[in-house]
Image (cartoon, rainbow, N blue to C red; front, side):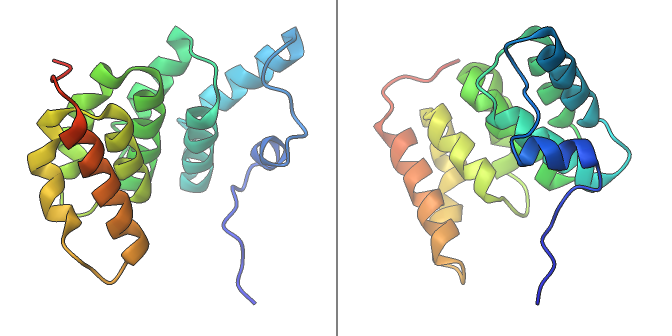
Amino acid sequence: MTDRYEPTSDFLKAVIAEEVPLSGSAFANGNMRKLIAMTRDGDLSNRDWATMLLASEDADTPEIREALLSAANDENDVVRAEALLGIAKRDRKLALPLALDALSGEQASMAVFEAAELIADPLLVEVLRPWTEPSDDVWLDQLARDALAACEKAHEPLS
């Protein structure tokens, strides 16, 4: 039996289980502020989950963007990738230089390719091409090809 990867925070576990509202009331707004704060938690599992949960929210406020931009500079590449995806969902132009940087590295995760597909900018084509070479991860290869196709289809750069 394998252990599920979970945050250590009971609060984040409650958010994952959808037991904690994040919008619609003063109580929920307080929960959102707590979630935002958890993106800077000292525990990696909490930072990772908080960033992913925040990135997946539909809300878009200056505080959320600031938290995601901060997480985009996290020491952990998974946290950075989740933050990039959250930024790409909110502002493709803001996400573009972060995606260029992420795709120029030694490794890229699912969230990076999903962000690149959302950004869909021709400037990403050349940095995406090497990622479309077949690897031992067929699923990730397909995400890279989907991102490349979206960027090739785009007519004008965002910048």
